Image (cartoon, rainbow, N blue to C red; front, side, top):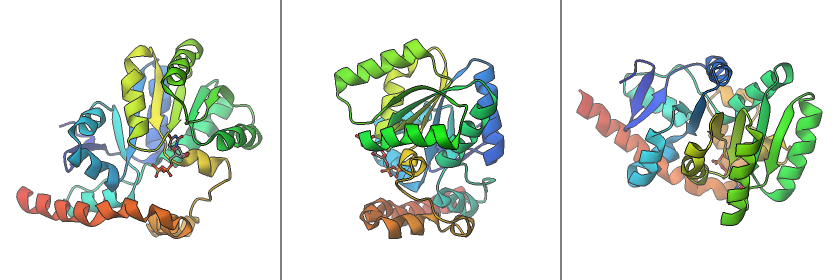
Length: 245
Ligand code: UDP
């Protein structure tokens, strides 16, 4: 196993800092590489455990980063701590800031049509100077999906953010990845809802206290289903810990 990776329940997590990860992606872009990035939480790890096809998709990712605090806790319990959370949101914002200084072109796929329209306006106000290669909402049929692939092939963006929710975004990226010659492809879940201003991110102190999940649950109680995987995840971590001893 690569020394930069820490395995949690069969999923290899990239062990780096948030700032280090943004630098690494910029470096990959400068080398003209094609990369597939997954930002994962315990729910994704458990989905992979129960769905081998999805697990095989994750194992083909170039980077899997610890997006949720549950991943950090799991890593600590197993005695192989990860440095810090490397989230889809912070990575996306980091790349947006870089794109104000560097000639990066960015493609945004996903979210509801009205959010996607709002996102474009907001990005041009909040990150003046960035280049938007394309912007498509995430409610498309097979034919439109093909048009999106063609558009990415034609426009050759440097970063492609896919916000369809997991596992749809990872499945979409992997289904088409071989057709693109370059680009950093990353699934970013609900990030466009936050960037467009529709949904608020938790306050900093809550994030620092590892309570962002609680904020998201309280502000959108219909998300409770997502937490069902958590007790089972922690149980599996305990089992794994005993096995490793
Ligand atoms: N979404 C989409 N197409 C779909 C289903 C969902 O573009 O067919 C979008 C949805 O509008 C939202 C995002 O995918 O912007 C998923 O957000 P969620 O908060 O569920 O994802 P998480 O961050 O929890 O993975």
